Length: 113
Image 1 (cartoon, rainbow, N blue to C red):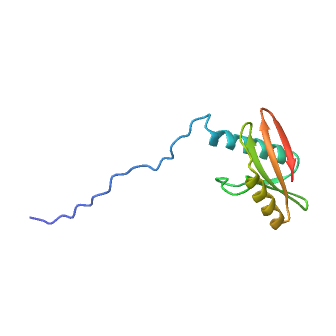
Image 2: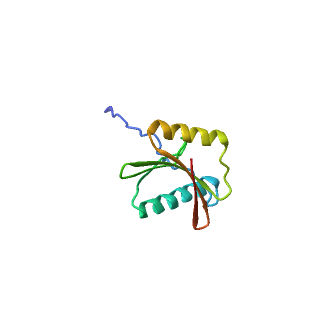
Image 3: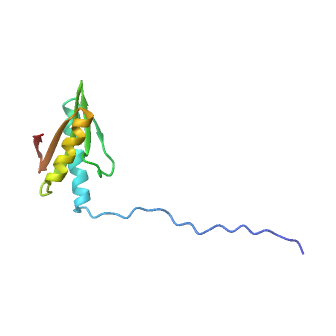
C-alpha cells in the first residue's frame, strides 16, 4: 500500500457584503454625498470623500488655499447641535471652514459655520 497525502481545502465561501435597499438612509446619504462632491468639483474644488463617514465631516474640499469640511445631509436627515459643534471644532483644528450641505431633490442648500 502506498501512503498518499490528501490535501483538503476548506470550503470556499465568498465574502459578499450584504446589499442595502435602494431607499435605505445609508444609500440616500451616499447619493447625496456624491451629488455634492460632483457639484464642488464642477466649481474647481478638489474633493475627497470620507469613506464610511463616521467622522464629523463627509467631504474634504480644497481650492487654492481654501479648505472646506462638509457634512452632507439628505432631505430629512437631522443635524444635531453636538454634530455641528464637532464639525466646527475639527474645522478650526485643520484651519478649514465648516459647512453643512443639505440636498433636497436637485438642489444643495449651504450653511457655513
